Amino acid sequence: MTKNLDNVDLFNTFMPGSEEDPTTLQMLGFKLLDWDEDAQKIRVEFQTRREFRNPGGIIQGGIIAAMLDDAFGPLIIIASERTQRPVTLDLNISYISAGYHGRFECEARIIRRGKSVAFVEGELFGDDGELVARATSTVRLSSVKPR
Image (tube, rainbow, N blue to C red; front, side, top):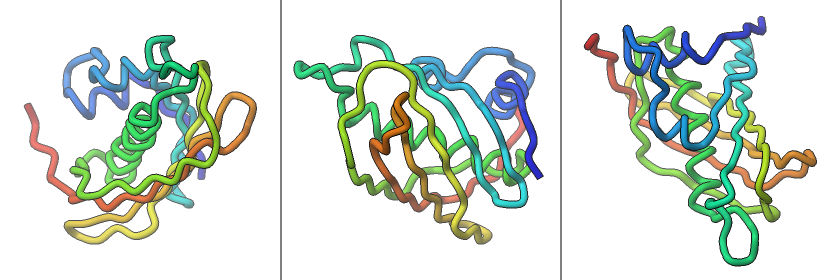
């Protein structure tokens, strides 16, 4: 089953009672596109800034990594129905092609989720649909505590 969720609804998970975006998601131009509950899969969009480019005009690899990592957080939060937040234990990235300034789309999914650890993976695509990077991550699951 696919559900559309709005950003404010998602961000309230991070900061209950607040409509402010978490800073890194805001900086990366995060937008939630889709959540497929049956497949445990999320689709999100990022919009880069010109200052994210390296001297060669390509988006710096650390920014690419941040986009993938920032797709995994909302994935776990939504999948756990807001009862868990992930803490990244490792993040492994394969850079496939150059990513240029503009819109990126990420599809991320849960491979396996236990009581305290989850394994996730995702792909990041450029605006032209070309695969830019693929990542896997192991995350520790922490209980969400109301603020």
